[in-house]
Figure 1 (cartoon, rainbow, N blue to C red):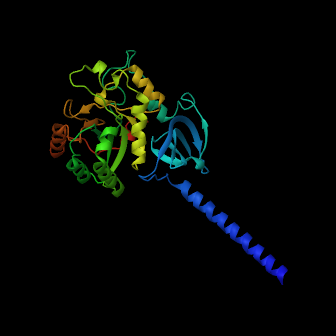
Figure 2: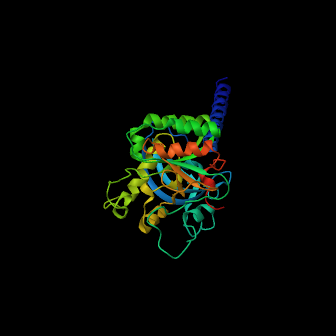
Figure 3: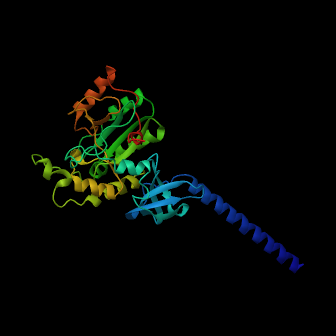
Length: 327
């Protein structure tokens, strides 16, 4: 009887171990099936740039541009090489190896990073990068520069009323996010509810600016600027607050030089300009990248946006910024 009981106990234990292993495998599969969710309490550590080609069990391919730890778990910020969509993934779900720009040169992502030059002249000081998109409609972008004023929520309500689920790319500065947690949470709630489809671009961490100083020595061209810190600290803040950084970076004031542009490309980010800064520039046309400031600092641009909508002079529809680079 004792021998039978021991055999039964061993069989039950083995079955329980198998069931537990199967349950763990199912949990692992579920964790790998969806992008990683990182809560607001997560510690973002060991944040660093990489460039790796990664494959998962489903044979999907992504390009990892950042590795980091979130409360001890290694994560990846990855880019789809053709759609430019980004996601945060558990590193354990992907097999990655280093790659190079040359090896990925034929992907849409690398073509967006390094577009063919329009002329042999040096890159312009102002408004370099992606300034006009392909196709119809417009690409609505808003800059959230440091500001003591509240977010203009009425602008976003108007967007959502005009086109439910309207895509909008918001270029966030780290200093704005630190001062406007409630406004940022309101935006993420609008995104989660499907009222808006928000894409989070990077607008630097400090957004340095000194009034009266010429562009050539202002913004990120000021001496002592640490470009990596300007990029990575904002990305870390976005991730820590539940958002996923996109591949786009908008220079403060749209001001950059060739060295800054090259540094940005080394970090695998696409420079984002605009051909219709509403408060300053020409009216939008089909394919325009429209720039407004819904941070309270530039109400004239928002008023003009509303007038253009009311008069039917704003090309429709609003389109996701990932569609803007040439296919």
